[in-house]
Length: 144
Image 1 (cartoon, rainbow, N blue to C red):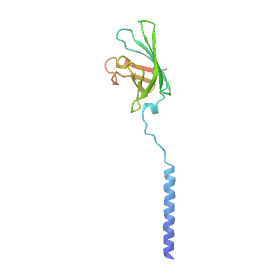
Image 2: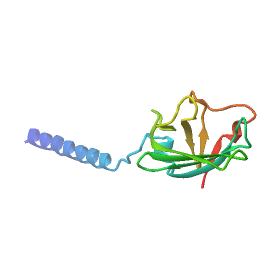
Image 3: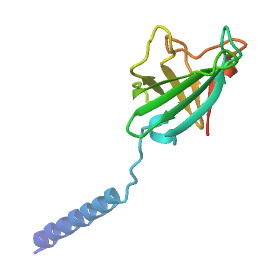
Image 4: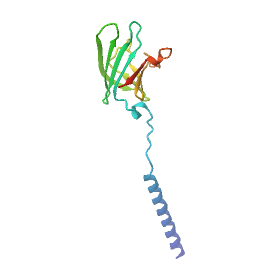
């Protein structure tokens, strides 16, 4: 009789512990590990700014980013002519999800990479590095 009571006690203890374990597992909160611009920021929209230019007063630049990873970019060289240059295509994200890379661009002439920040884009140099120096703060396009 003592053996039966002991076995039943062990079985009950097993079921109680197993029930507690299942309940605590179902109450766990899922935490995402995607801590990057693509996942965390409201990056879709239009960005505008005047970027530095070697032979004009500046380049008025407007970039529209869409959720389907398409873009439209336009440039106007200030005090040079009234022509507006437009390019459109698709963009991809780098492996860290913080930089967008424009497809369908002349990579030898035009910047194709922008760091996506909260409410602005930061133009990167042709190798994908942050531009430094006295004009570094001029390579920002603000979200409108």
